[in-house]
Amino acid sequence: MRETLTRLQKEGGDALAAYILMQRIFPKASPAYLVRGGICHEGLVISELGIYGAYLRYDFLKNKHNCGYLMRTKVSSSDEGGVAAGFAVLDSLYLTDKVICN
Image 1 (cartoon, rainbow, N blue to C red):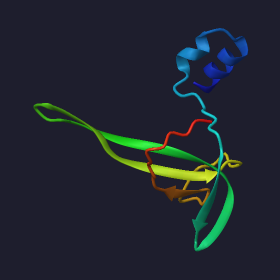
Image 2: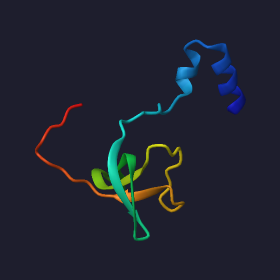
Image 3: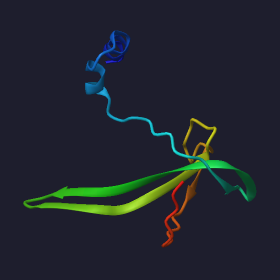
Image 4: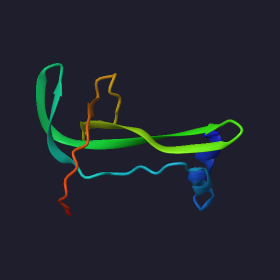
């Protein structure tokens, strides 16, 4: 597959689009404080929200959406994103009734 993707990328055209599953998003960084191991760090961060769902089938179809979520925040200069590896922190949502547009 690697060879095919490399070849299609070099050739150009629309054929490569058939193999792309996800496109990278470049979110706007925000100032924040991150606490890890009792130490507070200040910097520009980006957050990633993952929403989980479930699909269960046994003589009937049950598809349950929104089974939970995971919010992960990391410094904007990092290309890594693992919480366990130390590149990001677990976060939580804070929802308000304000609409902020930038």
